[in-house]
Length: 636
Image 1 (cartoon, rainbow, N blue to C red):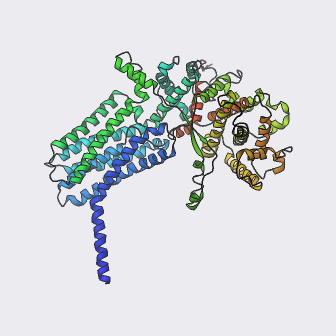
Image 2: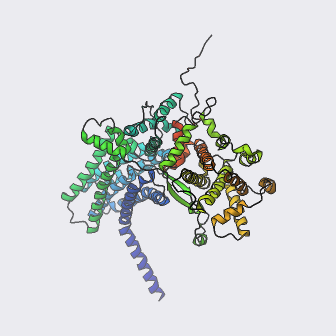
Image 3: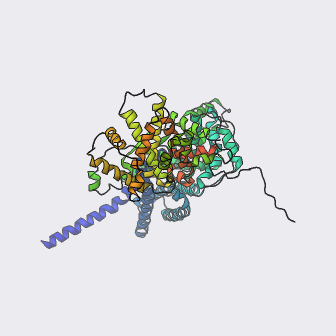
């Protein structure tokens, strides 16, 4: 009985080994093709879609695509060494033909060369890996000759395509931080948004590397945007960020020259000729039907992805910028350019929405803390009215302090708006609450809670108050959106905010709120909870009661909400002004490389505001006050 069991185990093991040997490569092929399709279809969408599921799928496909292609090349090369002495057969020749397609897959698609900025910095590592994999493919190609079959000759064509694509990928990674010479700008209108955005991009892309710009750069950009409408200004910034994304994470910026166009045509023709030659010239009687289907799939998908990549390129702002200087050549180009210039999308900002979510399954799987940052996210479009509010506030304070420069006004973290509105006229009590500490995280939490309380009591608890289209209601909605967005940055993207103890304050504030509401059994009703918070006796400053035991700002926020509710006529002008000022402060104090980092996640409203401020000169990265002065060296 034991011997019989042992024999059956051996037979089972042998059958599994034989199955893996026969199907291992075929499974890798299908998996690699699937990953390439995912990369091409999703990579361009992450430029303007913030959804986390796209990032997860794309990140997984990006990592697995190179790994699968590398493993498949290794499997084919190993089998080549093992079976070469035994004599070649038709199946081996087909495998050697497939090997060249994995080199093409290693070259990647035009719409994604790097998933993150770190991939650009590691271009030399990618180069070494590409050299090794190209050497493996070349070795397999040499083994395939001499042969009476057409397959080795077709393998040469696909090998050339793979070498070209790998070279383009390495060149794109290496060139990601290249800085061309600036170009002059003209006035901004609907017809020249894309070329003007491209001209600004040529200069201001250096901000993403934290490079200081000159006084002349400021003159050119400010003259471009001073007379612009808010919508056009944000559209220009949006197009600029699209150019920056393509420069950092795709091959697109390297493809708009005569040499790249010739290479793209060569790869398409070589792949098409390989398909036609395999279809009409190769003897396919010796191959299995499944292997023939896989080969046709390889060739067909390669051609389809080439065509799709060309369509994506033709549909991009890069081609629209090129057409802007050729629209007078013919009517077709003019119509194409007009269509390209008019197809624009709305910006998206990410906000936190406080809502109840079931956590039992997450706690059971012990991923509750891991998913905490994503539990309360919701996505809100940035409306044109919110763009108007932000742009008008930026232009209004652009020349607020001619002596020290406009950037100084935006370093006040909201106090400039409060002083202008006479908010501290009631005494030193309010000033100590709002300006007692310079920690920016504290101000975000304090004003977020105060804004939430005011909004809840005025609008949520009293839906018949004023029409939803009233100016106060619109400013209230804008304030709440910015408030939620700033809290999202504090919780999910603290690296984009000034250094502080924001997360400690956030956790202490949440703990104090839970304790306060739990003691009073206030489990339901946000309006009721807000009213209870406002009933707390705050005659003594909360800091004197708590000391340093807690960094919570809950009751400081209640004091602020009380004082805001007392200002019935000017309340939402104050709140909206403070939030725009804090948004601009955060934008101007975030490093350029952090803004670039977020572009791969769909971009941030903060980055749009930062680049718009730079164009208006509201930044400390223009440090040359007299741009036309020249230093002279006098030798006595």
